[in-house]
Length: 467
Ligand SMILES: [Zn+2]
Image 1 (spheres, rainbow, N blue to C red):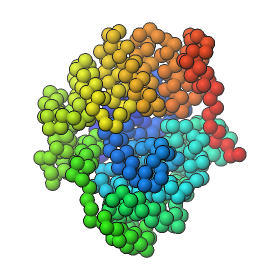
Image 2: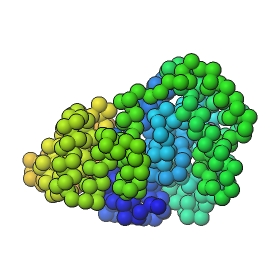
Image 3: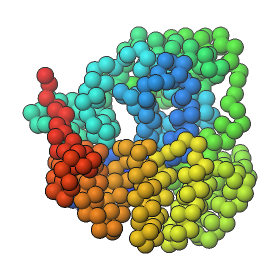
Image 4: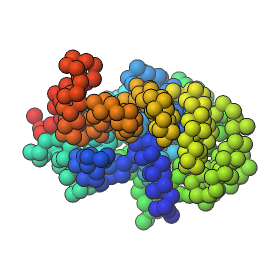
């Protein structure tokens, strides 16, 4: 069902406004062709990240993980999956699209939080603690590859990359990501505790797990990765059902406002990954609601007439003037219409209204200033992109825009340093060092930029060797 065309547009949007990579080793990242950079289908989206973080926040607090600085990472994959590794919760777009209510996603997050709080999967977390940023994701998505890399003599990310080409077998993934039966029971009980503590129902979690149980009985049905790593024996579902029904919150439903945000997220994912028809199908019961109009405006932006997309978006803004993401969409439409200065105004509004203070939006604003291209606008681009990177230090695309802005301003030293940082956060350490050395030669010894470059030069890539 997935249209390659719309997916590539989604990824094109992602690489432009966000950092997105598709899983395949050896694909060049940036102008220097980072041989080690792996392409991982990560989606960066301010709206979806903020929503999932809002789902997770009370749960993590109840689990005693509020100060653990947990990141949410969105994986562009239609399969149902969610997993936790170190301080990161990975959640597939497929999970978000499949779940009809916030409560279903929250239930999955509660269960995963139960695994973190229970200290399950220490082995995987140990491995991941040594890996860096994007490399972590590549390693996880090709979890079998990580095992292969760990056993080989090769150091660094190249090993994982090579492993991804040959490994990534389901068995290896299962052994690395899978849980023991006792851990599942513990995570279920913990999840119920967190849901109770936050006054939420366990109905969503139960629904998700029941769905997997019934899917198992269908021969030839596609098995979702979540199901593989979380085996659902009948007794487990029965126990969960009892616990869920015991809660006074069982009949509680999500607030209307949260459900609306959820619907808007689902329709966004549908439009970007599967096109307008999928989005319409998703909302056929509420075809005139705000979420449906949002989907329509986005589909028009992606596949239709930009002027019509703009007027549809303006109507959305009229309905919710303070919705940062409507202004962001307006900016996207204006950028595509080659009206960078007007786009910058919309993005600036989005930055101002964004309650989650996402780093993505200032980077988009900076990108619009970059497109304006006047010396004044380029200086603003540097300021905004830096602001975005302060909030979102690992946003590799941000460093590319920063390097570009510095380059156009004639500041070669800072351009080289930004390029070095971009490679560093992509896991391409050799390229990072080359640019860091270039930058250092043009910088006063001991200056902040010089010191940062030295940090990159001194960085030792995590070894895949066993101790
Ligand atoms: Zn589990």
